[in-house]
Amino acid sequence: MRLCLRPVARSEFDLVSHIQVEPDQIRYSGTVAQAFEENEDGVDFHAILDGSQVVGFFKIDRLYHETYSFAGPDELGLRAFMIDRDEQRKGYATAAVAALKPYLAAQYPARRALILTVNMQNFGAIRCYRKGGFEDTGGIHPHGIAGPQHILRMGLG
Image (tube, rainbow, N blue to C red):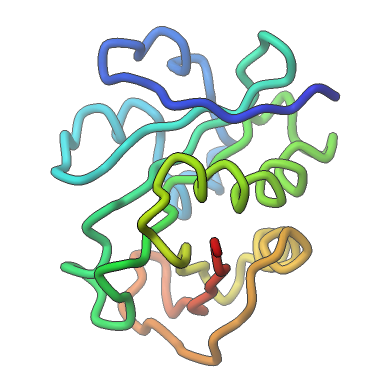
């Protein structure tokens, strides 16, 4: 595995458009097409690659604190994290989560932490995020699309 992360410009939809998750995972992550269609302010796209093969996608929300009161203005939000269904169970998710800290610290040097919410029933994702360096804040976000969510944080400094 030669995992690396890289920014994806809005004009590079074709680079990540093949990424698909299992139908039951869409309620947690959404789809790549939805991410590009939403055209949200303050949201940047990123790809997860193994060599030259794109195996995953995620969004970084620079304005996360404007939507979620538990986030500060010097914190980023991780959203729509997904690994292509044909590439799942190969270690990419855990490796990508572990790579987030150095990658995002370099991409966003003024930000001190990365925050996410994860559905309380999404046990595989919770395990992956914890293994990759996130800590459970103990907080609960009750308004998730698919139900209540844990609030996790990883320092970038």
